[in-house]
Image (cartoon, rainbow, N blue to C red; front, side, top):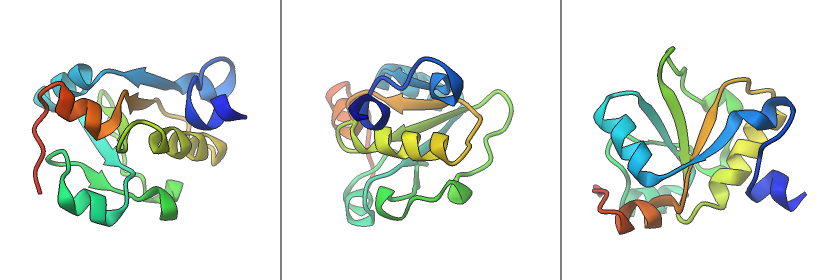
Length: 121
């Protein structure tokens, strides 16, 4: 159960569509214009700092119907503060029938900042 919610969502079925990616990879995708970044932190956390262009869909009210359309060739990226809540959001999306690839950013926004990623308020 813990792995399904927080980590290692790999293996058979839709769970195989969830991958961990580094902040550096996400930064490259953003630079290349192929990242659809979803921040699942709460609105006050997002207001304090966020990755420019990220969509805020708080985990506390997360619904799969709120996910933006991901154009072909683009990458859906979930992130949170440290990497835990994005795992719960990914599990919820998969359980709700989301078929596309979901990329979870390792370390969340803390990892993003630690690798030199810029944030805006």
